[in-house]
Length: 461
Image (cartoon, rainbow, N blue to C red; front, side, top):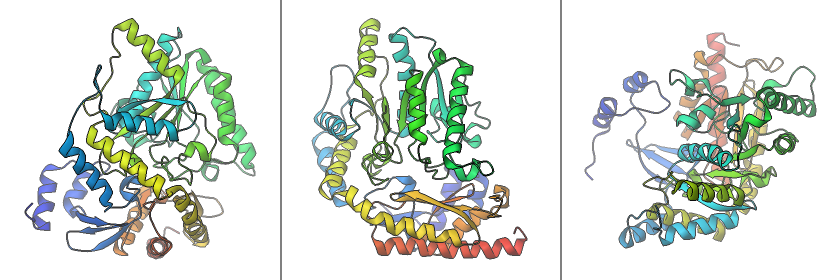
């Protein structure tokens, strides 16, 4: 491929690309950061500058940016069978082997796999399956879906509705009817007065139960939740939270859909966040690190009772009327299989456990910084909360742009981070080393120092 000058690429970008999660005019004016190549935990721009990718792309490039085994697996499958579909009675070996492998490592009882290409697609599929399931078992009113404020479940129609973030809803006419939201489990942000963590958990669990009772338990079909709320600011659940939530779901016969798009495949220090927090999903959604994001693939894992309803509905209707052209795409499936093999052979779970103290203790030390009110995280994911006043826990108005300033300064210091309102998030590739974690933390510290100076100059604190 012919190399194009960076300035020319920026103009072509401005002319033609619609950037997700961006101010289109601002990107066009400043020009995007154009990444040219990657190696290990680093990426390089078109000017040759190196950055430590502290967000693993989008929470996803778990094995770094130059794993040859994944490229080789893709090349082998391209040469053998570049495409085949699994509609009707068709199938292929990579899809079969991947489905089998997923069910072997997943939480107990998730024995069936419905493939797609992205987390958003699989969340929508899970929503449809909730509705389909309740129709088959004779509970057609049990269709409402509950998610959480600040939660993130993608941007498709159902997924965007389940996402509890205003900018995902604004002017898209979302959320659609029948989708409800309950409390965000951030004790730091929403704990009241001298309320203990246990009291906070009991209060928000009580709010969920009250919501179910107001709506009518016979109308509520499922509860969607991430083990750790990623795009909501890396919100780690407080002790006892999921035990109480699951108790309520069981009490009212409400399905539990666990969104492991970010937390799946060792991110939390266990193969799935469901193991970290003792979750018992009826359905589990995976994507991102399933293939280290080298190729797009996702899946919904189902229990026997959900699958039995699918089979019953297919017999009644003559067909299960759901499917995607690229579901279990053989090349994507082959890369995902190789990714899972690498996780197993290199014991990535053990490596994450070994690296966890380096990241989490480093983040915890930043809690002493004048800008930081809370440091939080688990495994190799974490965040620090930008706080105007430690005593009142008041954050900065996002319109001030302090988060964006800190993110840009981190880039100047050679580190890619992501600011989510007042949270500065980190999520490095799982193959990161102690020295690379220190480099990541050092870049974050320097960016925070720059942000503190900027905030004081502006009179914001």
